[in-house]
Amino acid sequence: MKFEETYLNDNILDALYDMHFEDMTPIQERCIPEILDGHDVLGVAQTGTGKTAAYLLPILSMLDDGDYPKDAVNCLIMSPTRELAQQIDQAFQGFSYYMDDISSLPIYGGNDGNRYDQEIKGLKNGADVIIATPGRLLSHQKVGTLDLSRVSFFVLDEADRMLDMGFIDDILAITKHLPSSCQRIMFSATMPGKIRELAVSLLKNPVEVKIAISKPAEKIRQSAFVCYEPQKLRIINHLFKEGNLQRVIIFAGKKDRVKEVARELKKMRIKCAAMHSDLSQSERDEVMYQFKAGMADVLVATDIVSRGIDIDDIAMVINYDVPHDCEDYVHRIGRTARAERDGVAITLVSDRDMLRFNKIEQFLDKTIEKNPMPEGVGEGPIYQMAERKSSGCGRGRGHGRGRGRKGHGGKDRGRGAKGKQHSKAS
Image (cartoon, rainbow, N blue to C red):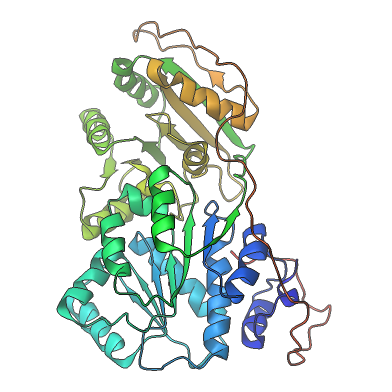
């Protein structure tokens, strides 16, 4: 389906035409008409499926067409991290290129006092769209510089990451100040029970749109070590002694394991940095800067960085723990083999995690190669295959209705064949 088959307004369509965006992704095709029709929406989709445009485009179109107050916050978009907030703001700048009267204000921590003063000034003057991290937004709310009483649109992006990072209570505190008439939109890559409960409490009769998980790129060479928990650090030690590994991300399920692995690598004199929820925003920014700049060869992290981090040269991903969901596995190993590069993904499967790894293999419809245990590490457990059945990885279809109106009757934009490309908004 093409963007012109919806009733997005002319200014949005002009910007999309200039950016060579013509065809919608599945999440956009199913969410945009529902949001334009005023429904609350619950979207379940991976990063990289175009979900930012799925909510930004219809909201901007309605803000541009409607009679919304100029001295109020009209749309609040919540992001779990500063990096994602910046990406959303960049997308806003492109999509709103022909909207001179629509303004945005990013609000996130890790900045100096001048930035905070600019945020206060922007809030006083009224910003149509605020893109904020929870902690910084709450600080404005507590000192009385933020009024959410006239917000018309509320978006909670990457809700599962909000849960992982401990922000759910902050989100609930923020949403108490929203008017009951506010249209609410929530996106999550996974749908654990707590996120489902959050959706029930925040959304009113939402249209649910679920997009099947994409399989990992074929260029990723996947393998696993089947081991006992105490053998994992010795396997890590072996991997780094065997090769001069650089541009590596090691994912661990808990922050204590992140710290433990980072300590082990530092004993080996490997330049590494650790990313976990105990760090402040400024400390996280410094860790990401060190890794992106090549000052650290290895990043050891929880799932904080499994989605939404734009690094194209990761050579290897190591799963120190088997992820809880198939979606998390796909997100983690998807950090490698980007921008036409090859990549390697290695998972350490303990005897307690075999069933979980079985489900991942069933979802992928493939048996992942099991590596022989390194010399001196000892024998590992025998890998047990579960009876083959439904993976339970959330591959069901959603229930979006997709009522787009064909032909919006807008101005003639002179869109001929010249220069037209079949691209998709991200």
